[in-house]
Image (tube, rainbow, N blue to C red; front, top):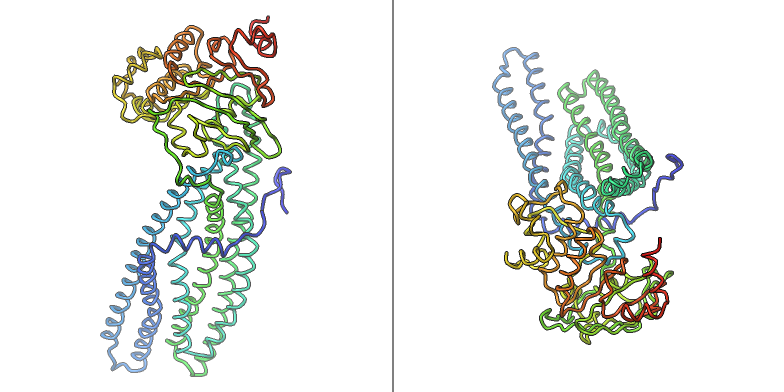
Length: 596
């Protein structure tokens, strides 16, 4: 097994090729009519090409007849035959064009359907799937792998049928002309098939490794570009390039092996075909000398010998293409076969305007993996309108509590109730509508500022938008933008991290959900702005149940209840004054902020 930079190439085990082909057929079935039309046109074009050598032989026959008998005028017969040949070749060209045109349309629809299925699948996968895989690898399945499927199906489907028809048609024509020379021509076919089977079998694992390595490389590139500023800040360009080079060499080795083996097919098939061609020329020449055949028969037979080898070469080429297609299809179907979140039929839907906001955590246990539990026997009763602060050291489980509350993950045991209703009995979409959420990581998509602000409430009025912007003290910034609310954001937009965070807070205000989740929502703003935002958030939280995750404990002193987490357990709870008076873990955390 070759290695690259001490990195073993992940060839993988043999996969279910038949199963993959069956799944591809499912995508082909809705377009069966157009596939049949494309294949029929391909067959007609192939038959037209098969008839060509026969008429070319007739021209040679007319010429020989003229040499033997000067009284014979070959011009009318030659012109008539030439017109027939022109019609045959034109028919072949037109049929081939429209066959390719229809197959391109079919493959584009198939790839469009696959991308749509993947998009729908993404929405049904649990968060744990994306926690364990790079975004670049997922994107590679949506782009590179599906493009590979589309290109290869477009090239292979109708061509394989045409190659089979051409092989059968040419074989029949050769039998009609000379059974003896046909036997000589087909002797090399078993050798071609053996070579084809061996090379396809050996190279298939390398094609699969190539697609896998490509997905890993895309994942690394996506991660490197996303963290470009961090890489530059820590002078890690050389290290990142070394990682890229290592992955690229892995891709190079698997791609080199697969392409080298597949490229051997055509020369080998051509070599075997030339042996057959040489044999026909030698035997045909001897038969002419014996007077058993005329020159036109041998000339026609030699052309058919060439045509007989073409399908074998095409099948070899199609074997390479289909291997690439199957390797890419396996990755796509693996993704589509991933375990989805349970269906939510017959689940409850709570109207946000009717939700009071009582929340109960009843003996909740959770771990992201079975081996590592994070939350242990978590119990908490939150009354409507209360502000609940969740504090604790890094890794204590603060964000995990929020993930469980939003049903991003399901509890291993125990229940979470909203107004007495178990969240497991409510649809995930409905749970999301009950909470307005501001995360530590800001997120603004490419589009107008209005679209970004109304992301959670599409029908929000301009008045609602400006009210939220003023409450967040970001209205002056929006007024300074060209077009104001119609300003188009992009990756190159000159917007600071703090301004982005203010806009995401305004977006949550506009959504006007009955409950709030604030995960270190003011981490990217200066002290003065933080005070202003805190006042705005206090106003927003009036009458709403709010869960606030904070590291700066000075921002949650007015919380109704503070939950102190450590190692997945609530070790202390109470308001700010009560917890300080206990002089326990919370007091230590709070006082550490002011230590020199």
